[in-house]
Amino acid sequence: MTDKIKPHSIRTRIWREEPEADNPFVARAAYCHGYDVYGEMLGNARWVEMLYLLFRQEAPSSSQADMLETLAVALSNPGPRDASVHAAMCGGVCGSTAASSLMAALAVGAGQYTGAHEVFSAMQAWATCGTDVEAWRRQSTQTQETSGSIWPASEHFPGFDPHGVSTATTVKQTLACLAGHGCGEHLRWLQQNLSAMEEMAGSPLALSGVTAAALFDLGFTPDQGEMLYLLLRLPGAAAHALEQRPLGYKKFPFGTVELEDAATQEAV
Image 1 (cartoon, rainbow, N blue to C red):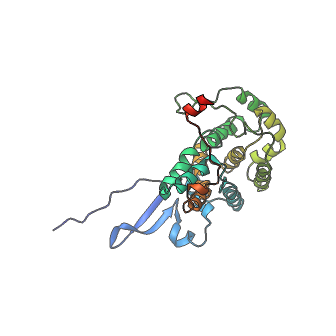
Image 2 (tube, helix red, strand yellow; image 1 turned 135 degrees about the horizontal axis):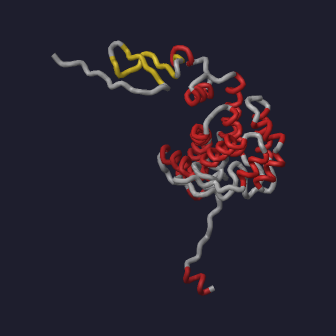
Image 3 (cartoon, rainbow, N blue to C red; image 1 turned 180 degrees about the vertical axis):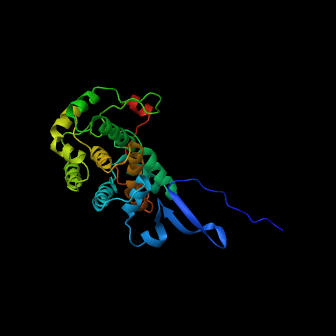
């Protein structure tokens, strides 16, 4: 008699499955932190509620779900000027696979300037400084390098735009809208102390800084915030990559640069 094959047990606090009676490798029911995904959540829960549940291990309140959805809309398309979206567009225009274009966006959008690790560092600063302006000032004078980290010291204070002149209108609009949800104190405090914070940083507030405060108010850790920031910015990268694929490089929306060879430059 042939022994029946048994699936290996999977250890995770996030997900639990009940197998079908005739196939132990297929789920009859799936539970995310105790919630029946296909039997109860499907058709009733919003996508952002599922995101919150996956990361925070509990269902969000109505105001928390609304706030996360607002943030998701704000981050959904950084626009073609953003380096991560530009990278995806380059993948699309040269015929790269869908996965390649998205991986390009993730790689370029992971860094410390407008990238996911900047959100991570800004959330760490919120955890350290809270709503104390003097603590933020002390933090701004310290090196941002972490011992043993692959990341070098940041060249600017995280969450602020080192090349900006004044706070962008879109950043102000996002801050006001998110603060209006009333989840946590840090967004409202940031809105009330914006001038002092920008003086502290020597730069205007960036969207990454608003995002860090919002995710901190929603209870996410810096590690979770870094992941969510990468995830929530992918829709725009995907859409722009798809737009460029049939157009070809001659219609790429960024101007070409004419280069001269060394011999021509010497002759001039």
